[in-house]
Image (cartoon, rainbow, N blue to C red):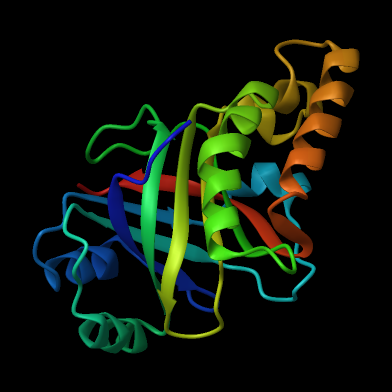
Length: 222
């Protein structure tokens, strides 16, 4: 079980991919940034293209996440910066149940799975947070070979409202292997069981037909 412990400003890009240089300029536009992560779809992350899901027809090409300990933000400034970047921005309450093995200025050797979702119809704010942060998170960690897991409960959005943004880190072996993703080794029975358990738990909180998934290459900027 986890509790939200930080806030994140997440910029999502859909056309032009963000560069490290533009990301660093964006980072400098805000004070109090504790950590910063840049994710881009590229030749490395394309190795995990089998996991891409795009039922909404709106798939991200990049993500910039800035972490703050302060719950206050100049929202209009964030919206203005996003407009300059040609991005959407989302202000999120976040938790990190499993910290990815990534130091400042490093690039993750595997891939980062980004899932942008809308909640299951009829689910209240309180139920969404309870199920996701207190109940589903351990299921996700137990049924996948996850090396890092971040949760982002969306509080404000500059464009279409999302309810959650999930960031999960996997080894490069999991990019093209179901068993490497869902089971440790070649245990197909365990793999199928884990897929069933994870899907059943996921459907308690999110609408799979309004949830996009793409893998990216993750760079830690700060």
